[in-house]
Length: 377
Image: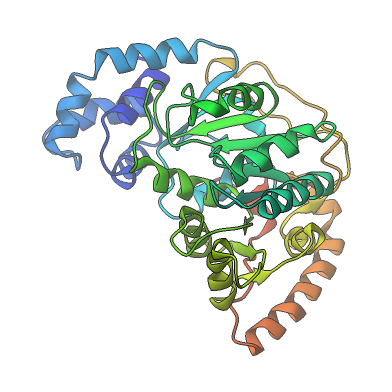
């Protein structure tokens, strides 16, 4: 049995992701060995999980295998060097990701743009304006492919020349939800990336969407809430982003607009009030390396395509890139200057009682294949 098939069975057996991640780590990332040992009574997996490993759902396994036959479909496991480092450092990362489209985009510095499914016309305009400007700044726009703010952000990012976007789903990667977004779903697969921890064929379920939100928050350097009511799911994404140490931004609105109350609550709780995309780009710049080339980093193959290295040109990514060790060394001086400015800003925020900005070492963004003995986990 190959590792890909074994990983599929570990995904389909269900249960706590942390337990399965730990079990995979205990077997040095060898999914086949973890699967074999996981069926034994002494494993930390529950009895129901062990039963599913011995006799996986044949229809679900066949559907996942069929889906993965496409050249543009990928399964990135926790044990893979291609697993996004920001997500690896987030709260409760998933065991694996099903990706339809371009998996290198999961390494690109991103902003999660979220908000109401039924926004005001002004809120929709704000989503478009921010998404357009963030894309032009070189940041990737990520969202959850819901109606309203999510759809407006995705559509606008794709409309920018060379623009890309990432959609994190609460369904299987092959399921367009809501159905009205079927065309947008297909467009993102062709020109961006669809991401899900749920196997192909998984229908929408209420409990899946908070899980979707944690992945969205974990993939992004920061989360921007455009317009949200006090009980909006967008606030869940913002909370999960804060718990992972990421920046949270909120757009203020009229005190007479009930869809502004969630944003106002976030601002009172310490989120950064923003009026322009440039404010977000400036806040996130110290966490990413200024762009030196018009190419994304090479992906060193995923799943069946490990011998095929790809380099894609993306003119829209003019300011930010996923750094490699070489770019890290070239930009050390500039990064130190940016860090000093950020430290001053953080001191001011600390004095005002607001939470400090999220700061991650540049090594968190480096692609695999560095110096011998250095970990990429």
